[in-house]
Image: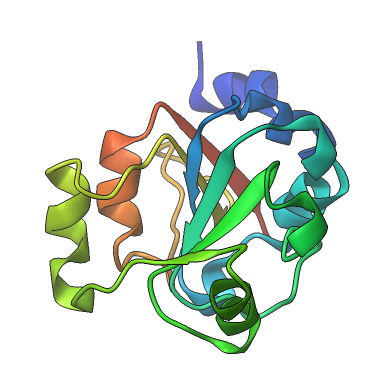
Amino acid sequence: MTFESVYQSKKMAASDAVRLVHNGDTIVVPTAVAEPPCLLNALSEQRRDFKDVKISQILPVRKFGYFDPETAQHIRPIAYFLSGHTRAACEGGWGDFIPSYFSEMPQMIDQKLLPSDVVMALASPMDRHGYFSISLGPDYTMAAMRNARTIILEVNP
C-alpha cells in the first residue's frame, strides 16, 4: 500500500471528520493562523450534537460558532491565553482559562496535565515520503499530537 492510497482512504469531508470527536473529549487547536477553519466551522455547525467537549487553544483568530454561551454544555472553550474571542467566554463563566507559561505547555501536555484527546490542525499537502507539515503551528501542537487518540488535519494546498 502506498502513502497516497492510505491518504486517499482517510480523506473525508470536514463535516464527517468532526464526527471522530467523542463526547467528553478535549480538542487541541494550534495557535492563530494554524487553526483549521473548515474543521472548526463544521464543528461549530454540529456543536449541539456533542456533550462536554472542550476545545483548547491559545490564540483563536476567528470567532467560530462554538464561542456561544448557549451551547457551552456541548462545546466549552478553554483558553491558554485570553484573546478577544476567549476573554468574553471566560469573563462570562461559559469558558475556562488555564494559565501557563507558553514554553512549558509541551511538557504539561506530555505529563498529561493538559489533556489532548483530539488535535485539529491545518497542514500542507502530503509530500512523496508521506509527511505533512503543520508549518506555523508546531508550538504545543506536536506534543498534543504525540498524546492524542485522534489527529484530524485540514489540508490546505
